[in-house]
Length: 340
Image 1 (cartoon, helix red, strand yellow):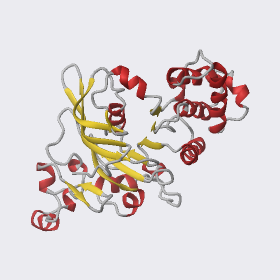
Image 2 (tube, rainbow, N blue to C red; image 1 turned 90 degrees about the vertical axis):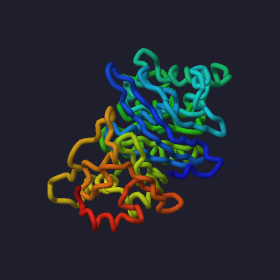
Image 3 (spheres, rainbow, N blue to C red; image 1 turned 135 degrees about the vertical axis):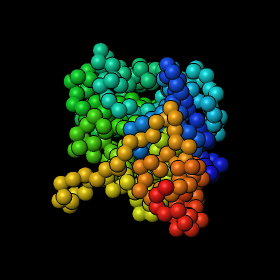
């Protein structure tokens, strides 16, 4: 079982299960996820599309689609059990103490409202401030996220800004009430590579200024090295490996994590080909009874297909859900061979 960290963790997610009801079936989107977030942590949750990354944090914030529900588990935030908070209670929490930066700023911003009014809307909802104070705060936030001429931008509409500037505005809105946790859901997906780097650098610099913790959701393991201090790798609705950035990159244990790292484009690679992980993610309507990665793993043993792996604690901060780390793995591998 994964460790959840010290008792004073800012956020603890314990054995979380989230199901989505379709017309005919139930999708087991999140299956027993546990992690902790300490003050000033930056936790990157990485994995392929459909691995359960976004659904996990939407469950934490109670932003699940109508078809979604938390079936089991606990969410402890700042010492409070918010698992069964009502919609009204979550409205008071979301935006003020936990904020989210969404993927596409054009769908996050209201095209009919000026930038300034959209920032002030959040302040009006959560803070007791005069109109003058809200305007001052809005322009302060625009400056904080690196937007030049805040007075001019305050009265502009989203379509008058570039993609990178719109994303900065979305970040400013998320930071309006000085949240304790900032969730960034693929915050650079809709941006070109140069702007992506600028936004990630901005988030890193902001953290040191505003004393917030960050959860970064991304499918790209390559972007987390310079911004995160902790990484949780998700696959098939589960966390398959978690640890510090150095542990994940340099002491990698899980074959899926190894595959993700191998698929990161290398600057000096002249082969002209990108490495990929063969196969497709599991069907979460009917998940595999063993390790979810076993059908795609070139090191899978018979036990991998039959039983879900237990978590092996590699260090105080590093664990992996893989039978290869089991004490008897080498003996089993020798007896059974590398494949079933």
